[in-house]
Length: 274
Image 1: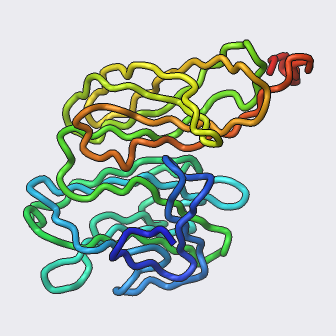
Image 2: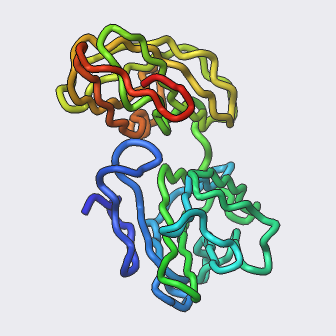
């Protein structure tokens, strides 16, 4: 099903293989089922294999908590991040619960959580558990993507969401934006971003990447002028010699339609031309 080797998942948790991921095409997806937390797996979610945490142990991941009608109510759900200890039990590192509503604001969009592990985990090898549950409703969902565990790499940039207009006309320049996440503590210079059509594999356009500040997300604009009408599935890739992890160098997908030249543009109720 595409899950990383050695990872365990609960029931009602699976890998989303197509749309909706924070970057690329795959993300973990869990749905609530009145599940009570247990020491083995506290709610819906997954446990990683054993990971070397290094000299500066961190955990970071992107998450999206939502219901079928919008953002999840933080007062109705509990989420936890736990790390295994030398006794084979779980230590709770972070939690989101009804009595901790000031800890984070749930927006319904993708958000990043970064955690510095306590000193006792320095140099250790451990498993990580990320799980949630909601007792009041089945209508609670949690998506997890781009999980990083251990000492942050010295040179690693990742692409996240690609967004922009989903309708266009041949010969008219369009501007798209891709979010570039620097997972390193230091700045990264150089590199380029290439936007391709995932249907055909054809390269459409590219742009040089600006300087990326450490531990920050930088939006990068990419301009493209479509030459033909039809359906496209845009996807961006990041290219830089020495990048530590090429597996996270692919953005989310964006489906667009380029109208034939003789089609009239669509004008929305705000007067915007598409």
